Image (cartoon, rainbow, N blue to C red):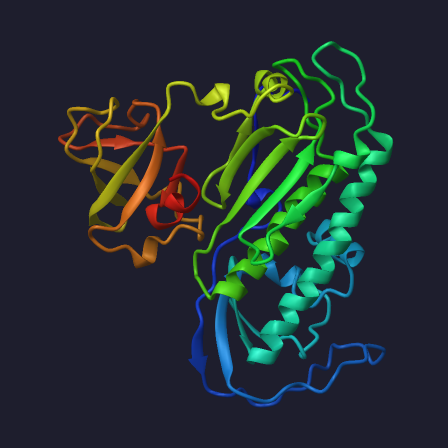
Length: 347
């Protein structure tokens, strides 16, 4: 299948969001009858419990014995139940189909982070090994070779960033990026790092800065603050990345980043006030965004919005397709990022 544009998001495999840390009374000891007797569990730590809200599918990562097992369970999740819970890591209560609450001690929280790091290193090794059988094609149409030494996946010690090199077999504007093992490893790395970032910072909406590099040149192909911004690039961007960093995808021509402040919130919309100079929407003192398409995106801090909260929206100057032409026009941004995070990587 051919795709003119690639948009890679954390939501490709798992719905991601943040977690909130709150004190909860110690839970009564419960025996997990479904846990196999073959599983050797350390003694469960005692101490003060903290509660974290996580996406429902994040349970597939926590406490996994290996990265290979994680991949198998994710692949079979449509017809395979969640593996038996190792209660050394957490007590779990299902909140709804897309969220869950975990209750852990500080020692358990650190155990989850450490185990995730082990999974991440296994993912890193798998990703590196995919370079053995691949050779990229350069702008001259010839295979470049010598890619393996530059084919890598790395992350910041505080889990605030992920950098990886990629290749595209067909460099034309209509290139295809197969949904193969490499794409899966990148997605899983983003998910694991995102979980550790949240548990490390205790920030309900903590993002990670993801950067894709051209594996042969080392130049930036695209980057974004996940899970808020998608990673967008096309074939022409890939060609350009052989000689220089790509600052903005060709598929984002005509789009502008506009800083806006929350003016008013409702159950079905947010009304913003643009607060910086802009060429787009110059005559609009207020703009509305429907929440219908965002209600399942639990990475967006919709429930915690306050008047004056600032966001950076990426827009193309058009109004939403369902805009009724009222006093306040509706917009449909391709991304919306809390300004407090945006400034960290886009000064």
